Length: 357
Image 1 (cartoon, rainbow, N blue to C red):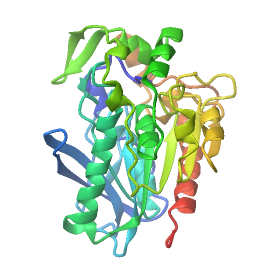
Image 2 (image 1 turned 120 degrees about the vertical axis):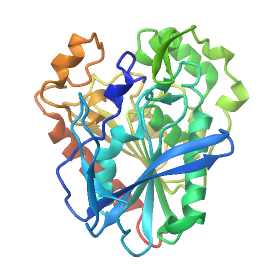
Image 3 (image 1 turned 60 degrees about the vertical axis):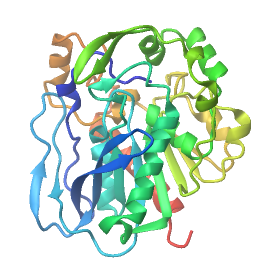
């Protein structure tokens, strides 16, 4: 699902928040990794456990989301550690996942994610959105760089690599785990569910380039490169995946799901009967051997976003934002929902990325 459609780049730029930190202190580094496939560098953020010595930095003031803190370029904890890759939602950025990245780092994981060109804050168009193969390529490029180059290669246990994807990022995480989408099925989905946010996004009107809104034409999904859309994107270095409200839920080929050979943990945000068909993952979990399915009651798709500032909801409404980015999903506040998600996600990776597996 396309999480944001009208909010400006300024509002996307926040790092998320949780109180410091349940376990180890967290370091953060920003690096560039060249993507030969893209022909450009990927802007990659890495969170990792550290000793807490160094300069504590904050994300900078943002009008919508609360800040978080970490120790910039602090020393990396010694030893071989598991790596978790992040893939953010459509129209967002990897920083929108920093609340869970920081938590994972505090529990002993190295966590890395890129802003996916063409589907990130200020650089997002309908034409680029369904190119899932570009996102899986980004993830594989990051794995190669971090496990073979520089200081990170000496600290990452290449036998323990997982991926956490949200929304469109969940689609990428499924694809890199071996699932394959069907273009005809995805096209039919948008014919049958034309009011879904992702299908409305494909209907055209507005995109973002160079941090500015631009007018864009309607995207006919059937015009996509069918061979690329349906290609095999499995990276066998990935040993586990957690998928939160994965997009393309109605488009994955059942036979490909039945061949997935790594543990998948699916999470849906919402009570039974209230989860959009676009991301409903219970049937996906049934088709993947050994998969685990969780449903977080009292949440919605936007509950995975960072904690909002107290007046953020009113501000968003004042500028005409249609998506309920900061509206409560129900009686549960977002911090409580995040705490439940943290436990599910950390337990999943602790279980599936154990030493020796």
